[in-house]
Length: 186
Ligand SMILES: CC(C)(COP(=O)(O)OP(=O)(O)OC[C@H]1O[C@@H](n2cnc3c(N)ncnc32)[C@H](O)[C@@H]1OP(=O)(O)O)[C@@H](O)C(=O)NCCC(=O)NCCS
Image (cartoon, rainbow, N blue to C red; front, side, top):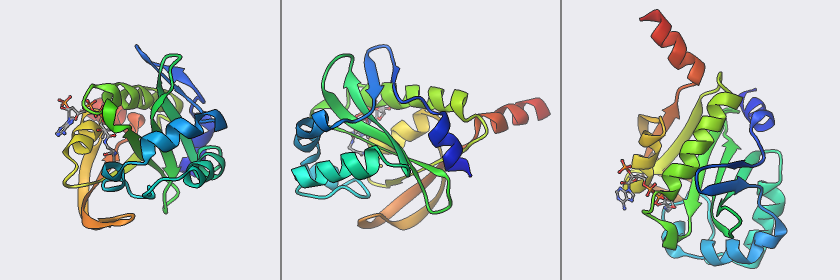
C-alpha cells in the first residue's frame, strides 16, 4: 500500500539550509500549544481544534505524531524551538496526504517553501514511485501557492475540507518515476 511505503522510507529527521525537521516530542508540548492556539490556524486547517489546549497537544503528540497513520515532523530553526508542523497522513484511499502549518509569526518568510520543498526532495528519493495528495481551501492563497511551487497540480474542486464547509481545491503531486517515464516517452 502506498502510505506504508512512504511511512517506512522517509527519514525521521533531516536538515535544510537553515532548518531542521525532526520528530515531535513531549518536550515540544508548550511550544506546540502556544503556536497552535490561534483562530487563524483553525480557520484554514482541516482538523485543528480551537481553542487548542494542552490535552489537544498531548493527544496529537501521542496518537498522531508518533503513531502509525501519519509521519510528522516539527519544523525548527537548527537547534531552535519548533515553528510549525508538517505531516503526511494516510488518506481514505491508503495514499499519502500532505498537511502543514506554521505559527503565525513565521508566515510569509519563505520558511514553508524551504521546509516543504526539502521534504518533497526527501520524498522523491525515498518513495519515487508514490504520488502524493493535498487539499486546501480555495481562499487559502498562500497554501495554494506553496503547493504549486513544490510540484502539486490542482486536480479538482470539492465542497468541504475536514471541519470546514467551504470551497476546496484538491491536488496531486505525480510520482517522480512517472515524471521520468513521461520525459522518456517524449
Ligand atoms: C501555508 C504556509 C505553511 C505557507 O508557509 P509560508 O512560509 O508562509 O510561505 P512562503 O513564505 O514560503 O511562501 C510560499 C508561497 O506562498 C506565497 N504567499 C505567502 N503568503 C501569501 C499570502 N498571504 N497570499 C498569497 N500568497 C502568499 C508566497 O509568495 C510564495 O509563493 P512564491 O514563492 O511563488 O512567491 C503558512 O502561511 C501557514 O502556516 N499558513 C496557515 C496554515 C495553513 O494554511 N496551512 C495549510 C492548510 S491547507
